[in-house]
Length: 203
Ligand code: SF4
Image (cartoon, rainbow, N blue to C red):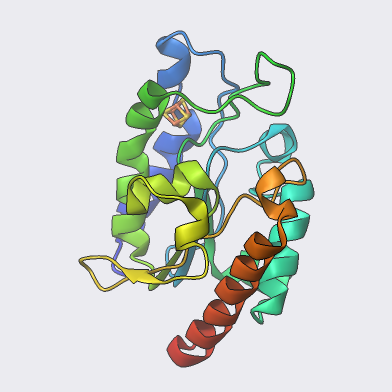
């Protein structure tokens, strides 16, 4: 861990107390959701917490989490150990509420993402993970820019700090992307890759 205890505690307290999006008139449920120690060597970055995550303040607590941890188990990580050892956060850290269509949750706007980005930058700087797992299109765009999910899932990139980035799709049951056999094959490829990295980097 390169972060000082003070810097780490300050960041966590600031995230928990933040209501910048509310102040900017976005209807969010304040109370940032994140978990894990600064010593984590793997960082999962989702889009934004859902309602159950917001209630219990635990990332990937709902059905998306069930599938995500099934994937991670295939790569060799058991959920309880993973949650204790590694860091989980999101592009925006407060629940953004339901989508107007009534289908699923509202995607955070660009403004909300911009308001929350300094926190993500500080998390990345203080944790400095060896492996980053962006989950879902929005999180992947933060690290990889615009792309077709089918072109990047199953591949591995390294950023300018040598950190490995392994993109994953959103594990939500509502994601139609996962229904296609060729996409399921890309996920299987990504999990093979993760298993290899986990062993090679001792994560
Ligand atoms: S989403 Fe981020 S910037 Fe917006 S209120 Fe929550 S912690 Fe603050």
